[in-house]
Length: 284
Image 1 (cartoon, rainbow, N blue to C red):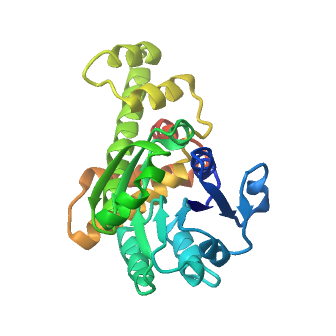
Image 2 (cartoon, rainbow, N blue to C red):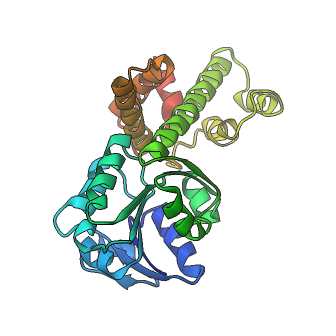
């Protein structure tokens, strides 16, 4: 297939390269030309040109407004994509925005799959992402071989927007676990106990988790350089709380963690790792 990518950062670039290595022809568009260096791809001048060139287009950008801009804005994908083509959005955006974009594209006969991913930069590099898909089952079946280049677990959650709901649930659980690990490390340090040994002990018991392994280790080493930039989790929790308000669903724990992320951002740590939630507790 001719497959397009918009969003060639830490996640999108390795994802695009996996698709290329699988034998598909790669085309790209980027706001910043430097992100196109050394990519074996046909470079397009606008998203609309990319849409005309490709059968399937992936977007991997930051926010709801970013996706809306490249799809529905001037010279956007909708202006170029032809009936029967497929847009796959792997960004983390509001479920309502996913449904809005799907409706706008459907008017032109263009299919849309919201397919947010989990696994971080390393998961993108290793092609081990978990992919949560919303959209028509038949369309998902058509692009599943492409998604299989990117991840090991591809789950059809439901109609458009459902993939984004699943991603919101994923973020809630993951960041809650990061906050719990931070509080555990803070308690250990406050009690004068070796945090590294506490983490080692917890890793062998019922508190064991990937978050404790990865984020707990960063807290012990006090390495807060970005593995996952905290500003992205802050953005995601804004989406979570907005969805909760719309649905009338109480999320007391998520609300508290959102406040901790607000405090983190206020300290200027948004481009550091989310394990910086430990430093928020240390400020108290």
